[in-house]
Image (cartoon, rainbow, N blue to C red; front, side):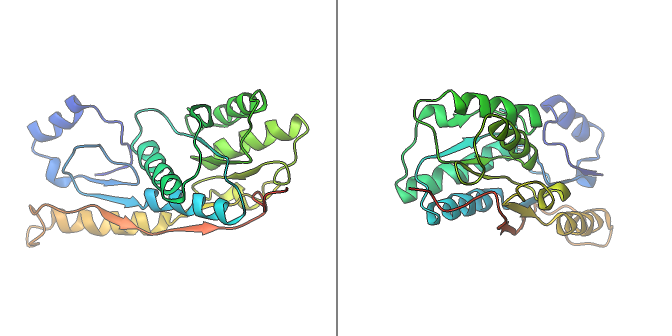
Amino acid sequence: MICLDGSLSSDQMQQFDDNGVSGKIVFACEWVHGSDLPSVRSDNVCGAQLVVQHLYGLGHRKIAHVTGPQDNVLTHARREGMLAERERLGLPLRDEWIIRGDFSLKSGHDAAERILAMEDRPTAVFCASDQVAFGLISTLTANGLDVPQDMSVIGFDDIELSEHYVPALTTIRQDRRALGTKAAALLLERIDPASEMRDAPVAPVMVDVELVVRRSAAPLRI
């Protein structure tokens, strides 16, 4: 089985062990924190760092982040990268600029409402998914702000709509084909009786990500 769900419970994971099938499971994209089952992952930490670097290069210093679901491994990895790069660059951080989301359009809408109510607004927002970015941009626009002239927005995933949204979304591209092919190859190795990798521990396989620059992020307007 190739599993894309990182929210499996400890009881569910234990059932895999109890039934002797753990050696036939590979995680792709998401993974279960603390599990030693093999996984293929996008470099989410690097992706978040690329976002902060890009916004910094555009002159932004007040950068907000809309996260994913609280217990999601992608949420933690992207937040980790964002915080590490922010610290490296010496960027200011206000608690209210870290906004809890859930990868959905609605969470982007809700985040925009919170940003609009702030006295000290950020000039740029890094969203943990493209869907969040779409909800954020539409709500900012409906309230009279121009993206990217008044506020820059960057997403994560590069889903198909990102290129066609208005404005076209700057985002982090995950190589979904590579995630799938590498996960399939790893699974085939694990279930091949003649493979030396059949029972060997496997470090997470990391897949590179890419910053795709479009129109939703622009230089800071002084």
